[in-house]
Length: 201
Length: 171
Image 1: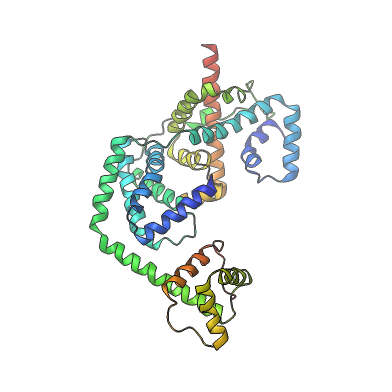
Image 2: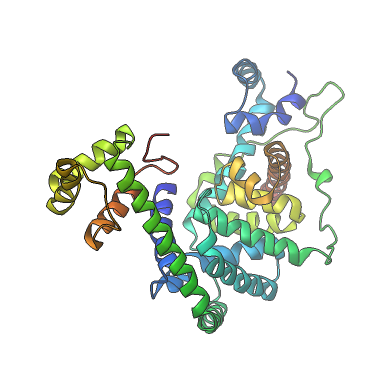
């Protein structure tokens, strides 16, 4: 996947720099969905995400001539998108939708699991569950506060390495790992509850 | 290692950054603790599932949003063709510079070992470039001005086949 992406990006970058006719269309074709979805997953609001997408593409087109190429083209675009989103969120302090602490695993004083664990990992392999699971993962991801959400989306959903995500967000790798870990614990717990209730119902 | 400690190390466990001895200890715990096995498997399923679901889904943008975005960008890019022209000129200048450095390094025998081989292979197959570089060797002269357009583009292509970050000349 990443080799393909890299090849496409190289060609696109080249033609954007040359100002080839059609380069901007190609940029939009390849990235408008990704950027819009990334912005949506951070901002959770369609009109905000639309405006951010406009800003992101304008920035990319204006600055492509000065892009140094020290990082991959897609990670540069993601960074622009994340920064644009975070700037928009600033000042609009949102209330935390859920308290992540309530969904962390609980242990006894001896450090053993306090409640029984279901292993539903095989169950979710079934294709029939895909659509429903996709919806639930999206829903639970949106409930996370932005601090966790952005990291989970970049690392686990988009599949970027911890180093790439750290670079995009301007955080250290350990900070990325700890947020990612907590986001996964939260989603794991939510999915467990969902699947357990689904079975009971 | 108890269950709680295990749970806190799972990110390291899956991204491969874990100390091998801890890794073994964790595996030993998993082998004898059903609770942790279930926890670990479902923990892994979260990221695994998130990624695979995303891969199957087309990145969707509502059609009307996409259309608005396109017309916005088109209208906006019309406003700064001058800016783009400036960038293009800069890129052209940078490339000319790069090619000049390359030809300079080649004629001074300062190409890196790998680049030397690439250039030789290319010159053996390409009459135009072969003759261009031979001329310096046989007449013991140095290049004067930019190489012809055809050679320019061949050299650009050659430099682009080098791995990113690889310098073509010797320090």
